[in-house]
Length: 66
Image 1 (tube, helix red, strand yellow):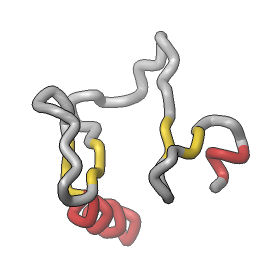
Image 2: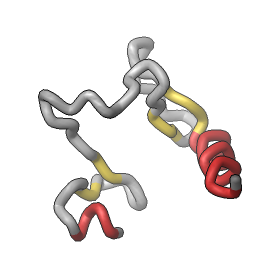
Image 3: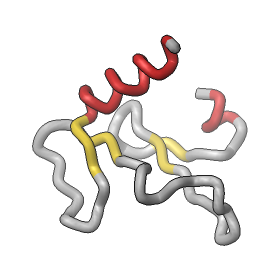
């Protein structure tokens, strides 16, 4: 993965998943509309803006098609 090779993200123990930490002054991300794509059965708590992984990936691929 390009972001991992560039050192911008790190791989997680869960295959195919990475983590990216925003800088303190990074204001580019829209936190209210950012979502964590989670596989079925994974729950991170009520304060995490999550979406079903397959549904989220479908949405992303549709956006890329435009």
